[in-house]
Length: 506
Image (tube, rainbow, N blue to C red):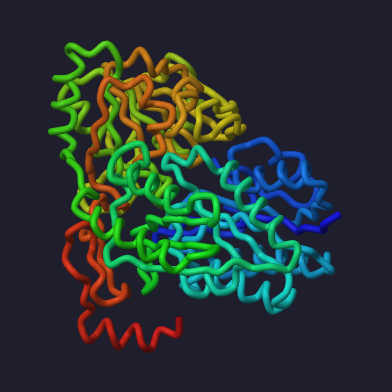
C-alpha cells in the first residue's frame, strides 16, 4: 500500500494590490474555504472542484495510504506575510517529514505566490521540502494555469501539472491527472522534462479557454502530448513584479524537449490574438442598455479591474456611478463593504439609509459613492454555490444585503470572493436571470455560470487595482525585454531600478 502525503497551500499574489494576506486570512479562507488539518482534508475536500480532491479520489481507488497534512488557501491579494508563509509552510513540511518513510508527495499549490520576504513562495517551499525528504521521494504538484512557474519550482518537483481551463472547471480533473502521474513514478522512474519561457505577458481578460486563442492553443497542446507525455501551458499571472513573472510551457516524458519547443512556437505565433475590446464604464453601460432593449437574456459586464480573484478588494464604485448616471436597470455584485452590510442589518429590511458605499481602493478615480439606499433584502451570507466553478462549495460571505438605488440593485457582502456563481446574487434576493444588465466583479471565472444565461458579454475598465492591460502597471523588477502584454512594449528597467533589484536580496 503506497504511503502518500498530501496537502495544499494556495495564494495568487498581485504585488500591486492594496491588501496583504495574513495568517488569519488563511485560517478563515473566505471564498477559498477555511484552513484544514489532517483528517479534515479527507472529510471536506473529497468531492469539490479542487486538485487535492482529484488526488484523494485517485488515491482511494488505487489503495493508497493517504497522509493528509494541511490545506490552506485564501483570496488573491497583495503579498503573503512572512508570518503566514513561515507558519503554514513550516507546518506542512514538518507534517510531511514526520510521516516518513513515504512513497510519494502530492501538493496542491497555486504557483503565483509572492511573500513579503520571498519572490518565489512555491519554489522556496519545494526546496525546503526536498531538503527534508531527500531526492528519491517523488513529488508531484498541481498548479493553477496562472502559475508563474520558476526554475526553482521546476527543478525541485518531479512533475508540475496545471489546469487546462479558465474558468477553472477542471481543478479536480487536474488532480486526477497529477495523481496518476505520481502513481507511475512509484517504481522509481522519473520522466524526462523540459521547460520554456515565453517573451510576452498576456492579460487575464483574454485568456478564456472557451475562446481563441487559448482554446486553440490548449487543443494543440493536447495533440502534442498524445498518450505518451504530460504537458502544461501556464498563461501566468501578469501582476507579480519579480523577474520570473512569465508564461511557460512544460513537457514531461519521451520527446519532452521537442514537444516543448513546438508548443512554445505556437504560443509565440498566437501573440496578436491575446487582445480584446475594453469599454470605459460609460461606454459599456450605454452598449449594454442598447443590447438589452432587444435581448431576451441579461447583458453581462465584467468589472475586470476590481476582480477579487486577481487581488482587488471588490469595492470600487466606477460601475455603480455609470449605471446610476445612465438610469440603467440591473444588478451589480459583489461589493465588499462590511460596514455598509452591518448598517443595512441594523436598519432592517425596507429601511432607507444614507451610505458612503465602497470606494476604499485608494486607486485614482475611485471614491465612495454616497446616496440613499433602500435595504431590499438581508442575508447571513451562508449558502451553497452550484455553478461549474465553485461546484458545491459552501460559501460564507458574512452579513450581506441587497441595496437598491433606483433601478439598480447592489449585492453587498462582508467577505471577499469573486462573483462567479449565480447563487451569489440569489443569496440576497436578486434573480440574475431577470435582470437586463448584470455587472460582475470578475474577469473570466464568471463565464462558467453566467455565459449560459447571457445575451452578450462585455468587459469594462473602471478604475481599480488590477489593470486590464499589463503595460499600465508600474513594473520595476521584470526580466528585461519581456513584452508588457500582447504586442506591448518591452520592459527595460532604468539604472535606478537595476541597482535596487541588484541589492534587494531576493
